[in-house]
Image 1 (cartoon, rainbow, N blue to C red):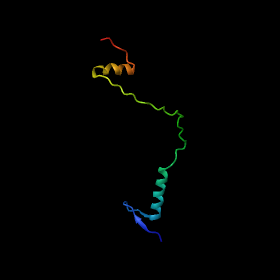
Image 2: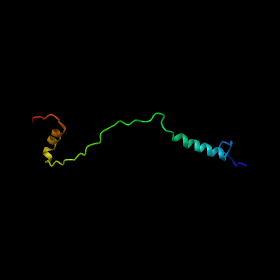
Image 3: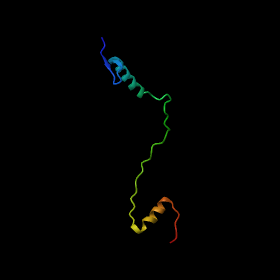
Length: 75
């Protein structure tokens, strides 16, 4: 004999039906995509060594513009 319970709407359901619905919902959230995703082939990043620049505050703007390739302005 199966145990029955009633949902909050008053419709009787069997515990095996609830278990089946629960398991089906788990399965539906874990489906694999129908088309496998292809990752683009990329070369490994080269090890980048950071440089430390020691600069006076008055020359900071000039250094940033030189490093970023901004055109020089005559003041």
